Length: 206
Picture 1 (cartoon, one colour):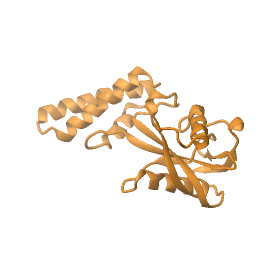
Picture 2 (cartoon, one colour):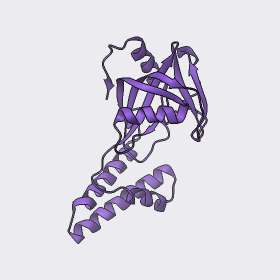
Picture 3 (cartoon, one colour):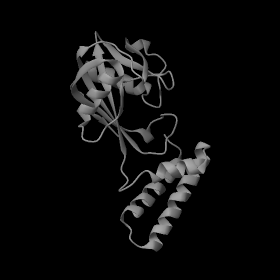
Picture 4 (tube, helix red, strand yellow):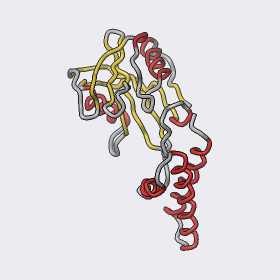
């Protein structure tokens, strides 16, 4: 679970973004800019960053504030789950990443699986929709994120690393390596095995 200070700062930043998107009054715009400034100061203090870097990040967000979407693909072969090793932190994770505009969630996860692992895949089930902030992912980040987990069937391709990954491998349930917990948590891997064994399970959601 993310700390309360971050929850409040994100809510404040979202309110400021919405106000700046729809307000026409110069007086209101000034107040919303001040609100965004306070949110940035809270985040900078909490993350031990320079305030300007946080302001620059928040200023790039325009229009009505909405959660970002992260997609993850759980593909199996001979009862083992496909994981990739992240180049950034050396931890292992389900292949995935940000959903792109003009792609459906299933198109996005198929693309991510191929780009990060080299395997072609077909989505068979939406297994889980999780709110990142309600689970112990680290580090905390200044945006609100929904994480979509899909069961996938491998249809072709071969193991191939990418500029984002330094390893591609299938793992038994009792032999899961150290994970990149910013992206994937142990209980999420366990739930994907549950869904793989029992496709009739309903979709998990927060």
